[in-house]
Structure formats: structure tokens, C-alpha cells
Length: 353
Image (cartoon, rainbow, N blue to C red; front, side, top):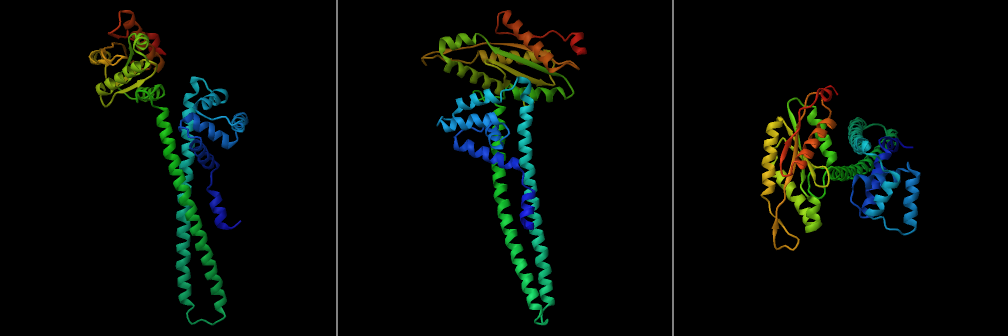
């Protein structure tokens, strides 16, 4: 193998080939580059999951359309994981993105090295050629060989540079697609707010910061009744309207997310429970003032929310904090809805945990 070919092969990472093939499959099948769809095609091309690959090939051989429903079935059958595996899955996506970054970095280094080598060799050749002016004719053959070697080196350098430029463009496209897929995986499609996974990450980061922290959990009252009487499109409009109210109400330091069907959560850094309850009541009144179109489009209706607020205490786990906020939300529901309830202070047992 020639030196240039060895150098070109040295930086190659199989992961970038699998990633590129996975994205091509997504484009061919006209699928959204969600983490689940990307993962299925990545494993298919990597040939590391025999059962998954066999299932896909059988479906393709049968002429079955690999639509979103089929992909969901493939994921449920071969790759479904318990909720506790969400973090490792996110880490796996990050690992693939890191592999792409490393491949791109190595490609750039190789390109720079090839260009520098060719430049140095060309300079030395020019100096040597000047020194040979007027030399005996017998040196002509040696000079011809040097010139031929130089032309070959330049040709190889151009080929390597072109190849690396193409790989760099592919890697940049994959990086953008992965970033888009990762963002989609952290966003609630209906409301545009962060989803439960994103909220969990934001909560973990907030708990690592000093200072007070409060959490508010809120739920739309009688939401099932709204869906039953006005229809699901109207229910979706209510969810989007609440998300907009949240976005308008939030401070720059706050984080809101849709964590369930009609349930939302808000992180309030540097806010004590009493202040958080007051802020939540402002939101409750703002939501109550909204008017939504009825199913027939001829009238308007309003909705109310119930809110539970809890303040974090030092050493308290995220699950405990969310559990106390949820208990306060339940109390608000039981007390008649359309109100804000503040959680009781954490017990000594919770503090110790």
C-alpha cells in the first residue's frame, strides 16, 4: 500500500461510515432523523444486532413500507429499554457525535500535514534544482526521477485533499442532522416546550448549583372533560395556550417543560417556596383569563390549573423534591382545584436521605 493510502486509511473510523449510511437510509425512506430511527439504521449498517437486521431485511424483501409505525414496532421489539435506560441512550447519541468530531479532527490534521509536506518537499526541490544549474548531463536522469516523484506526491496530495474535503462536508452534514435529532428528542412536539427528559437534565443541573430552588408542578383541571366535550383539537389548543402562557410568564433563569399529558413542570432557581407560590398564582390567574374557541368555533371557554410548589432542601434527592411538589398538586386538586398549594417542609428523614 502506498504511503498516502496508508495515511488516508489511518484516520478512518468505521463509525462515520455507519453514521453516513444511517442518514442515507433515513433520507431514502423519508423518515424523520429521530434518535430512535437513527439508532435503528445505525445498528443495521453496523451489523451489531443480528435480529434487528434480519427483521428489517425481511420487511424490505416482503415489500413492506418502513413507515413510522413500522419503525416504532422495530424499536419496541428489539431496542425497547426501561425508563432507567434513558440516560445511557442519550450518552450513546453523544458518543456517536463525539466519534464524528474525532474523525473530522483527524481528517483536518491529515490535510494540513499533507499540504505542509508537499510544500516542504517543493521548496527543497526548487533549491536543489537551482544548485544543479550547469551540472553535468549525467545528473539529468536523477533530476527527472525527482521531478516524477514530486508530481506523484502532488497528485496524491490533491487526491487526499479532495477526499478529506468531501468527508469533512459529510461529517458536517451528519453533525447538523444529529444536533437536529437530539433537539427533537428533548422537545415536546405539540407545545414546543422541553420534554420530561430535558426537564430531568435541567433539574439535575439546578440541584448542583448553590442557593434556593423551587419546583412547581401544574395540571389542567378536568382536562379529560375538555377533550370529551370540545374534541381533541380543542384540547391540543389548550395545551399550546398553556405553553404560551408559561413562556410569557417565565423569567430568563426559569425552565418549563411538559412532562405528561396535561402536566407541566417549572424550575425556579433562587426562589423560596413562598415566593414561588406567589409567582405560580400569577400564572394561574393569567391562564384563567385566557379564552379558547369551542369545537364549533362559535364560542369561547376558559380553563383553570392547579399547582403544587415545593422548595428544595440541602441534600434532598430530585425524586423527593418532585414527590413533594406532586403531593402538593394532589392537595390542590383535592381542595377544589384552581389553586396553588405549597408543600410541607421536608422531614428530617428526607433531609438525611
